[in-house]
Image (cartoon, rainbow, N blue to C red):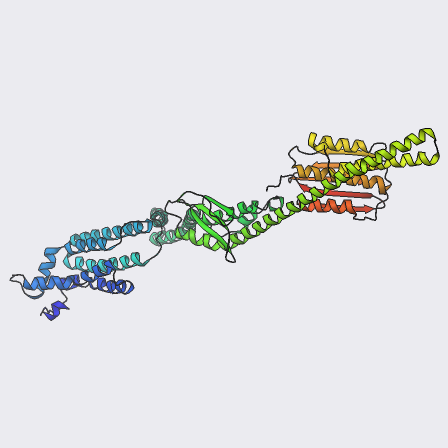
Length: 543
């Protein structure tokens, strides 16, 4: 408004006035920035830049010059040239925050690009478009720079610098392919004398662009997926990650599965999950996310970002979206671990009770039966009678049963040899006591001790029941390690079958199998006999 107030008036808008129309944009941006933060250094700088036209007008009036009115103002604008624009960019650079972090560096980069584009455009316009064209370009450029700077200052996230370059390359390649194919069609149509070669070439260029654009978008999407991941978990990702969940014997393996899900969705190279309220010791540039359920910290997720300043905001959002699900997984795993520890405590107490019973049988009842047997045999040699002979035979059977019970409670043969040797000795102890027992064993040598004991006792229980109750002629015992990391036990007889009574032996076997993460089933049929089937994991349980 200063030139008009000071008497500059002409019918046509002169070049000097056009040049002054770009600077009010900085006043608008200054108002917005100072409204957000009254202490904004950039806002104050923009407020000063908005007064540039008035300063130039006042300087033109006060300077000694023969020119009058608008001609004097235009003379001063011409003398300054691009100096006000360059000074403006310097002031903006001073007002923008320093490149202290990744976002500030990106902001400064785009500011430099926009500034260079503005100066270059003004220089080109000054050569090719004349004074008035230069003034128009300067005006529009100042408005564009003011808007870009405001956007750069207020935006919270800036994409990496190479991503817009990828977009530019894809767009240029699409336009180039379309223009090349359209030009070839036009040349071919002109040489062939086809009517309207220009129309044919233009139509071909549009069709080519339409066919190339999906390929360009696919390449862009592939580039972003390699950097940030898919952003979400697809059905294929879930199927691949959870394909072997049924073979897991330790609940803590689920933590690795959950970490793989987060890595696939967010594009991180390495992600780990740990249980407990304490944070793990990781390098300083790693990022830690607490896993909280119901106000309690159940674990920590830690990840290694590709950049030492941390993950990109897009990756942070993806991880934040998945953290509640991962926290529930960590909570479930921690409960499973606690339940596993409780089962092992019960198993240890049960083993202690078995050891006490074993001591009572071995040190108490065993010597009593031996003494009674010796006295009966001594009396039988002096006065043989049918009653003493029957009594001596019953005592021998009782001692045999006691040895089998003691062997089932604590198979000491496993302390000195492997499971195969122990089972062969066990089957050999049943020889001469009824049916024929056949053993087929194919197991690995890496069975956990508690698994080997459970297998041994299941075979002892199954064969003993067949001898006592089934009236069987043959008993088949199969102990195999199957491909999914489990060991199976099958004890099958050809006896009379049911009914099945879950007494002390079978109930104890079922509890032991459950404590070890396995199952036991018993089926009976008067035509097919009785089958005991046991499945247990082969991996050693960790404490």
